[in-house]
Amino acid sequence: MANHKLDCCLCDQKKSQANKPKKLTIAEALDLQSDLLHPDTNANTRPKRATKRQASLFSCSSSAHDLRHLELEKEKENIASPRGVLEACMKDFDSHDQSHESKATCSTTRARSHWSKFFKIWRKKSFKRLGSLPPLISVPKIPKWKSKSSRENQVLSKLYNFRSSWVTFSLSELRNATNNFSDENIIGRGGFAEVYKGCLQDGQLIAVKKLSKGTTDEKTAGFLCELGVIAHVDHPNTAKLVGCCVEGEMQLVFELSTLGSLGSLLHGSDKKKLDWSKRYKIALGIADGLLYLHECCHRRIIHRDIKAENILLTENFEPQICDFGLAKWLPEQWTHHSVSKFEGTFGYFAPEYFMHGIVDEKTDVFSFGVLLLEIITGRPAVDHMQQSVVIWAKPLLDANHIKDLVDPSLGDDYKREQMGCVVLTASMCIEHSPILRPRMSQANLFSYCTVVTLLRGEDHVLKATKSSRRRPLQRAYSEELLDAQEYNSTKHLRDLKRFEQIALG
Ligand SMILES: Nc1ncnc2c1ncn2[C@@H]1O[C@H](COP(=O)(O)OP(=O)(O)OP(=O)(O)O)[C@@H](O)[C@H]1O
Image (cartoon, rainbow, N blue to C red):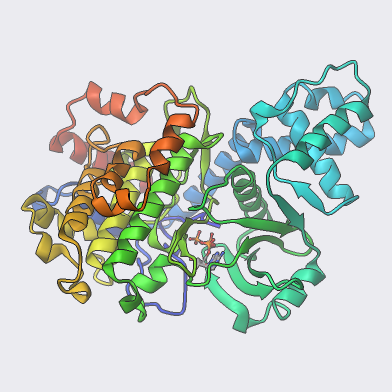
């Protein structure tokens, strides 16, 4: 699960260790982020770090842990978050058995009632196949006077009728599928999980994400968060959940993406497989997936960990966004979500997230811009010298030196017009002011810039956007914040210093 801390491993630990973002101290992270925000800033004006580094850096580690704990507690109480909804209803279900009255608590909201029924069925295991969870807005209001069984039947019929199904697996089924979780079947390692390749009895290839790292609380929280979000997600460019298992360790089962992650291809020995047409297809697909999460699905979802390792590739090089362990639902009326703890992957953090803990669509857009730079240049977000691709690329982007930006392994083998569109999109997405960054509906403009895309009939994004419940174009909180103050270099530096002080206690 993606509960990264700045002081812990910042990316998955796949066999190829080369070119991976490295473990950074807070001070190093601050320096890098300062560079990222101010490539031109004189080194003397950067936050000093030598003495701070000596200050026991990882007192910070324990305070971060405490903050995480606090955040978990807060989220448990917040029924607007997937974790909150799930846990509240698990609790309600427990108490339901002891007292008939407590049922009323759960039925105070349709959402909680819905989840409560779900858990009841799931735990009793009276059947194995469940419909994926319908969007909460579609759950019918059930009059309180109706009998319990009548209400249950209505909810169940909704569950059955809702789109594709996912399965509750037994541990023995997953053991059989993965050769008893043999090391040879491991295809990925993340901060909190090992991922095993497997094959079900009917021949379906699967990836089993076994949450084996972290405390029980962390594992449970990560499992509930990812399950709560992914159950609402259904798009060609998002990972496909097959089911889950709660026997032994908690496990999520996905369709196998045979080519693994974009990160492992782009920064590994199989880079040659990624010619320009594939890279372009991948960029378009990720943009479609992210647009769907932000603006077209039932919930407004901020992924919070868009990076090359979290983009899976099917055998046709169709990208699928995975790892929803950090994802947040934002209620419609919320301008943003604030976090007090930094989770995600260094090198992909938007400035306003790093400085103010602001999470909204624009923070994902920034990460998407970094990802586009990786696709164009073939460089990792942060290389083994801890150099950020953003800092490296910025002068070349500003001077429009496209030839110097392009991955040397591509040579001249790319379509100029497509490359121009992707470069332009990347440079817009990594603007340090979120106001200047496009939304995904705009970031996706590049998919309409080329004849190739139009010939392929990829107007589905436009259609999807039109047909979806369009939200009024609300200004993001980060936009308001930066509008209210002229965000200049001096203020950036002051913010950096303040953050350093908070981080170092
Ligand atoms: N469905 C899948 N098909 C193929 N490989 C997969 C699949 N799911 C995950 N992987 C591999 O496992 C790796 C880790 O998966 P994932 O990112 O979900 O784990 P995590 O513990 O949440 O990681 P992180 O530390 O990034 O949060 C991926 O980068 C990918 O290489």
